[in-house]
Length: 196
Image (cartoon, rainbow, N blue to C red; front, side, top):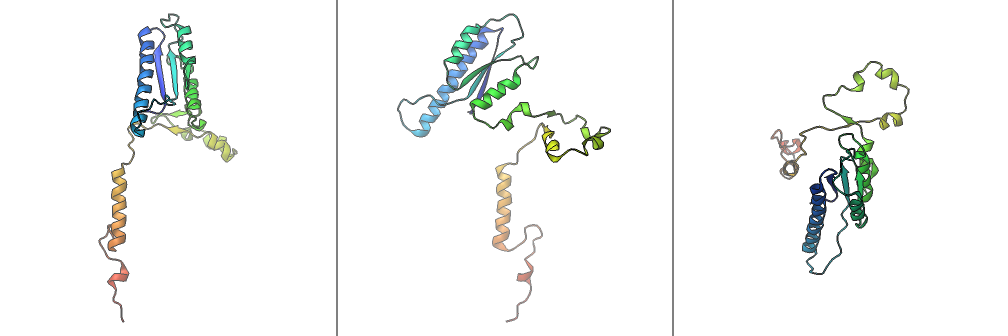
């Protein structure tokens, strides 16, 4: 189960608004049952703090099925919830949506997508463009770091914990046996003769 949520409905579909309301209730019920199972008590607990942003997508369209007053009334009655009108097609308020989510969740603003530039793996780098070196020679290190890029690499896998355990086992067996796991040789001090 997640820790923070973005629930999106389409302004031209009343059913999607009803689905957002249902999903929000389902998320809160799941969080409450999970916290009750962890604590083991059967007491009625206060609803957990779940940062949530409700996004009304397709705000650029003129035809709206959901009621704006209904949406505002619903969101204002909730704690730890914000509402943002967006248009994914026109990239309108998408950064604001994530900003609101980060504020609600008390996350560092450095993680906000608005502060990152997207670089695709096939995109030519600036370093290969003419005049790159002459243009950036006089800039300070602070300026160069502020223009740093983040790279989104598809299909990247995080090393598994199994790999970490295998590496750790190899290191500890090397230390305990005194045999180098890579060359299968004993350390020099054990091979040489000792005169007593």
